[in-house]
Length: 130
Image 1 (cartoon, rainbow, N blue to C red):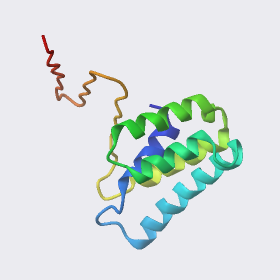
Image 2 (cartoon, rainbow, N blue to C red; image 1 turned 60 degrees about the horizontal axis):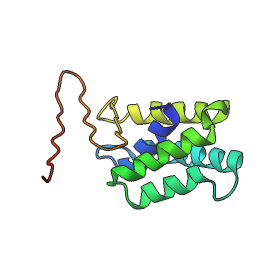
Image 3 (tube, helix red, strand yellow; image 1 turned 180 degrees about the vertical axis):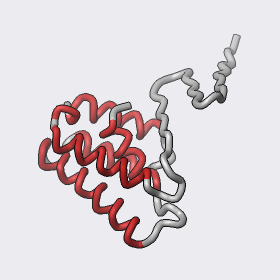
């Protein structure tokens, strides 16, 4: 997943992290708002990326919303905008400075997908009706 998608999904779904100072919360919030503003400036009011992020913010627990954000970012060509990519990297850096430290974020988009990381395992079981 690209850094723009990762930053948007992580910030939108993080909520109020436990143990963060008010200053840290403000810095993360400012960086997130700045990234969203750059996207709006680059692609216009009501663009697909902004709408997909709003959807994710409304339903952060929905994996499908994460896929919509990923698709919208890819389709938009946001990665070609150096200012947007830099803002995403800055936001990710701030998120990594949380008490939990660096977080590894995965997002699976599609059907019958399992993801595993750092020596773990994952399986998918599909029950067929015969």
